[in-house]
Image (cartoon, rainbow, N blue to C red; front, top):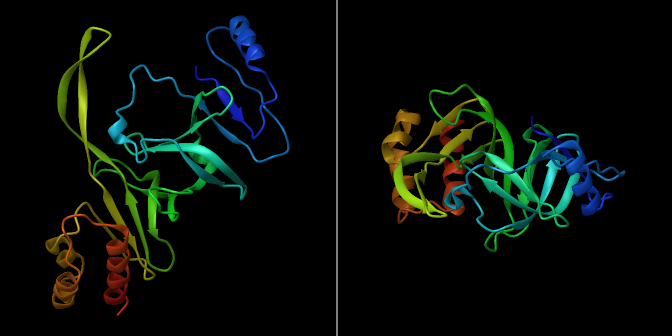
Length: 244
């Protein structure tokens, strides 16, 4: 059974007490941390196998702000987001423990500085990560949020396996490739979900506007990399042809 961890800005229990409690109660660590500040809830993250580092949105710990569903904000925490697991992690500064935060309690989170970009937000939305799954609450990067919105789900697909050794023991490791999902939402309740923003898919979305789409793509050529600036322009363009 996973022991629930309650996290606050200040830790009131010393590490020595935690170790003593663990010895008395079994193999699980138990934290009981309370004060009047906003707090986070989550579980101690101790996976049997290490998580593939390529599946993290940010491989290194970055300072971020976490906006809770109750309206409170927890600021300046070291966080990581994993797209394969669709989970947000926090590194507790005193114990250095990794905490998998409760998704239910989080509305959105913000990286204060992601490769020089201070505008990277992830928001919890209801969507399907694959065609076989039911809709669920997932974290999507909010490229644009408002009357016309674009969220990018940083999903992954399994490409195969490779044989590696850990402590001299061979085992198969899954190999993943990112497969982003683009979710456009417009004011007229029309939604466009696609894994590729190529010409054919855009034509399918709005077949009556092929000439306008062709003109937009001609003026906004990309070298294969779809940066946020391009995605923002595309969202604004699609909103003009959807709403008219």
